[in-house]
Image (cartoon, rainbow, N blue to C red):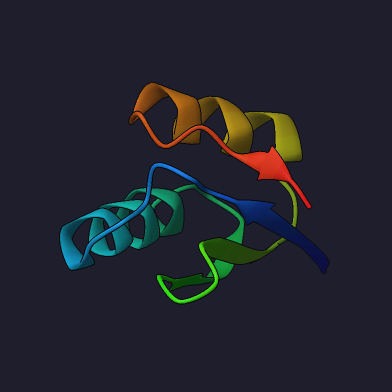
Length: 69
């Protein structure tokens, strides 16, 4: 299991949080996504076939580009 933490400056409301969590959770291999509005961070636990590159590309595609913490 791999864990990554991203800062997501574009995430600023409950709708943003829900969108980020829902979209990332749909990727095959992602087991848990926790977004926090208080910290502006998203913590993602995943295994193959998901990759960090895939996750980052998806976040950018849905207009919540990540910044590696």
